Every structure is written in C-alpha cells, then in structure tokens.
Image 1 (spheres, protein in one colour):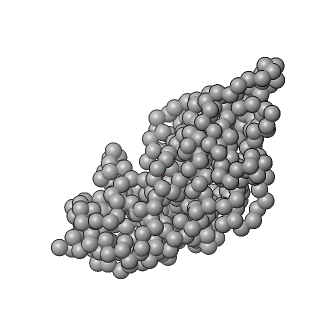
Image 2 (cartoon, helix red, strand yellow):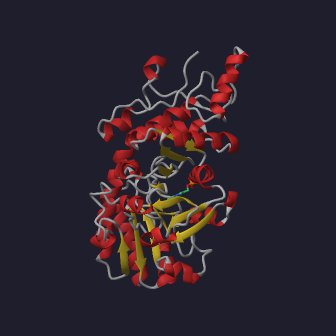
Image 3 (cartoon, protein in one colour):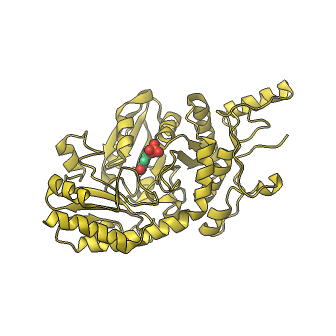
Length: 400
Ligand SMILES: *Cc1c(COP(=O)(O)O)cnc(C)c1O
C-alpha cells in the first residue's frame, strides 16, 4: 500500500520557485499534474493487525502510516499542503486546522494547559478573547512588547507574539524577545507578514502560526489555520487535532495549495500599492497619523529589511474627527470593501473601535491605540490609482 506522508523533502531554492513547486513531490508518481482532492471520510481496511499499528501511529501523532483509516486522523490533500507550507516557512513540518482560532486553541492545549501564557498587546481580538476565556486552565498576562520579560512567571509555558500586530501594524523584534524570555518558547502569529516577508523560526521562534484564511488563502473564500514547527512539537499538535477534531477540509487544503504559487506575487503587489497609499495618506490634512512599517514612524526598531523583507500590505490610519469622520469616510467609498479580514484580492477596510474592538471599554481601546478615528486597511490587488481615487473620495467626504 502507498505510504501517506507529511514529509518535507523539498530542497530550499528561491521562495518564488519553492512556492510553485513545494508539495508537488509525489504528483509524478501519481501520474497527475494538479494535486488530487481526496474526499474520503473513511478508508478500506486490509489486514486488521497491520491497520491497528497505523491507528496507534496516528494517535501517537505520527506524520505517516500505512493507511489513513479515518479523515480525522489524516488526509493526503491536507498533508500535501502542510508539507508545502512547511517548506516555505523553513520548518520541519506543519499542522493545518479548520481555522486560525482552531490552530491557536490546539497550540495552547499542546503547550500551556493549566499553565501561564504571556501575550503581546495589542494582538488579534479573537486571540485576546480566547485567552481571556481561560479554557483548559490557561491563564494569560498581556504586556506591551518591552514589558514581556517582566511578565514571565515560573509557570509561564509560552510567549505569544504577533508581528505586524493586528490592527495597528506595529512591529515586534522577534529575535530580541526570544532571547529575553529564553528558555520559554515563543510562538509568532505571522498572519500579516506571511512567509514571503518573514520566517520567525529562523529568528528563534519555536512555533509560527497563520490564519491561512488571510493571505495564504488569498481570495476570501476559505477558513484555515496552520502551525509550522519541529516534528516533535507537531506530534503533540496532531494528537490534539485528532482528539478535538479541528481538521482542515480537503477542499480548503486544495485551494490553499492552489494559492501558494501566487502568494509571493500577491504579497509583493499589495505591498507596493500599500506603500504608495500610506505615503499619500500621510500627506493629507484629514489624516492625523498613518501607521505603516514602510514609513520611518512605523518602524522605530528598524525591522524592515532585517526581520521583515518588506513592510507588508496592512495600513492603519487615523482620521481627524473621530467616529463621525469614519462614518462619512466609509459611506463615500465605492471600490474598497468595508469588511473584516485581510489578505484578499480586493482591498478591505474596517474601523476597529466601532467594530472589531467595539466590546472593549473605551479607556482600554485608547490605551491600545485604537482610537475612534482609526481605520485598518488591508490592501489588495487593484490598480493603485483607482484605490487612491477611492480613498480621496472618502477624505473629501470627511473634509466637507
Ligand atoms: C484572522 C486572524 C486570526 C484568526 O484566524 P481565523 O482563521 O479567523 O480563525 C488570528 N490571528 C490573526 C492575526 C488574524 O488576522
């Protein structure tokens, strides 16, 4: 019987080439050009004694065995994508989940049950909510990046970073924090950067997490999450995935794999446009401030070019005039989509204070820099001049 495997045997070549070819290693042997989608929920069993060995291997977190047995244990379409993502993330392996939150939940269960986590602030709103829920006895302390070492306790099991951070696009020095908190392992939510712009494992992080719903999916048509890490750490994540069932659908895995070859092109194009728009926004009287790592004000630690290959495609900016200005601005847009999420082909914009972080007390929002006039824009693939005309429409509505 065929060996099913998550093996990451790709040699490191340039990112663009790897993004095209990673995860395609077994296609020749299968005699196909497009990766097949295996939709089986169950698999025929042969010699039961042998199949018991496979069952036990999966339950122990193995990445390969002779029979998938059941789709909650293994799916070859998902495994092919995991191997591809691991290759471009410079990881031994990766474990995919049904969503970014399912991936984070599994990571917390694998590392921090009944223990303590230090989490950077600000961070993705869903991450704060999950940690505040105290599931599995995980207790969390939030701290701005420079206060993270002081927040460590003897029972701290994990430090969780996010850079660029959502929704402010602030950068955190991964290598510096890894060093300051050693030997406590560091996980980096790298969703906003993608492996095109940063590879946290090469900077000493133990885990990289992505909401693959965003740039990795790239088209706004799926939910997925993935953790890239060592094979030993992946075994714990796979065991939890089998027990809790947060598996990625093979359809979504196929789409993620299909999106991978264009990931570098999409990120680079969106980033080039974002840099143009950020610079123009900064020159406008209606705008109080622009937070974008490509502006010197947005990268005080000089991490672009060192930690990150480029400033990315997320631009946060604050309008003068607070909530009323935001309302007028958003109502005037005709091209840019007012929606949460990011990393899609179309440009998305949302006001964190009025929407995603609406539930926080106002003083807490101010403390996190989420003032009423703030907008988070996730730049897409449209023509930059068309996008600028739309932003100008919004700015003119604010001024009038
Ligand atoms: C969207 C997002 C998540 C959550 O991912 P889902 O796929 O929505 O579950 C986590 N972290 C960041 C930075 C995100 O943008």
